[in-house]
Length: 232
Image 1 (cartoon, one colour):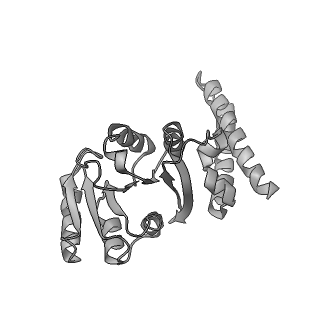
Image 2: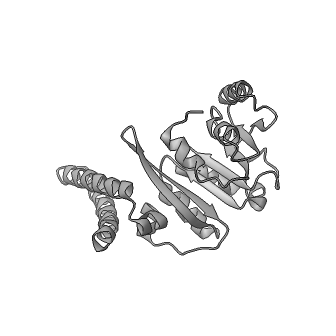
Image 3: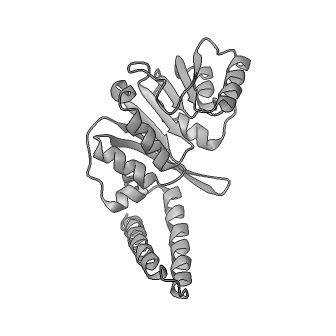
């Protein structure tokens, strides 16, 4: 089965033999890919919307995998009981929503040993939640697909690292690896922040000064991350 580079990168973080629950499965591509490749024996594909879930069910039936992949209408992890999955994927949604799903799904997470998360925004928010709740980031990746950067991570129950601001924003494992795609992202963000700050300097808005202060803070974090690449 052919899937996008983003979905393949997320799938590659799943350990062989895992019992998987895919939250916000959309078309069901990740569980279909993993089961059809023989990397996992079974999966639960969940979505809050009936439309995407129906399409996932059709794709599962087309692939002859109805006996191995179960579909469930579910708001986050609500329809998942403890013990049904040891690996949970939450990919393709905003960081704040991913955090809310994790908070609300604490009961279902009791038997989970691996979280694989690919938020579309505010990944620092996700990393902070994990760090504050004794999840350790074990692996990270970042890809560039069709002009967009996609960071992703796998976390396990190994305790907090007490991440600093640079690690929260850009990822402890990505920084350790001096990941080349992260470097491209940092350089692009540096230019973007510079442009925003220059625009704010010309603004007469009453909020411009507060916003410029925020941008200076982000520039500082960005600069500290870039320094790590120069030290390597």
